[in-house]
Length: 357
Image (cartoon, rainbow, N blue to C red; front, side, top):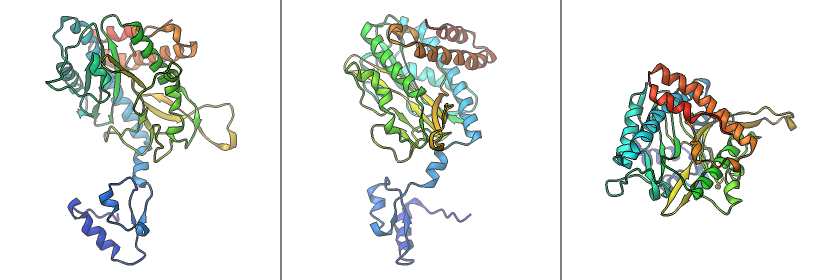
């Protein structure tokens, strides 16, 4: 259909040949391409626009949306099996960051249509949780402990979707500072997920919503709040995102992004709560100037640990959101756990999703 494929090693030669076709011939090249590629095309001969292929990938079709939903349910089954096992095993003092990550991978491999991890698991205990992109190595591997927070950022590639989820858990008694930080992060997470904004709004314009509860206490985090995600493709997929830096493409209905505020205290602990959310039309009373308004719906369905929450810091609307979210987790993931005969994980899920307040 008019598409020609060439070896990547011949790109310089091929682009030069295209330019020789005539003085008015131009080459469409994304301005975010590498300097080496952009330098092959004179500025006046470039069309520096976003590739339409990127937008086609970013805005998911019905099949992709359904696949992402199903993949996230099965992924949540694996995570429920994992966290319910950690709850029993961490106190024995035998699990390390690496052995725990390996266990999680095995739970994922038991799920239908699992292909691979979507990225190396960030399995981090105590002070390692404060390292935002920490990957455990034999040299840094720490034991999981009932005395420290455990931050796990992980994901899977399934034939019908890609997942990326972060949960922060404590298997003993968290400190008041840890609970306060966790609750502020949760408030930001909920605020962004429930925000209503006009279609074609850049992610950079709504990112402050997730940071505001932390800012109000003089706290912050040094990473973006959301990235796009592919459907059995790249776990970080543009062009959309929710970041302080302007993204190449505004947010549109049927895009998926992550919602992942956090807080990190060097040498002590890290907190992050991450769901993948679907951007969808919002129901609004008015429709000013014919503009469609959007909001977000979580497709990640893993309980948020209630023992880490200071309920007095949450509003009634935030408590209602959390309870509704947990009810959905129990309904959809619980059904899948029952079908797979995973009774212990189902009991854990039932306990973790009881209403707050």
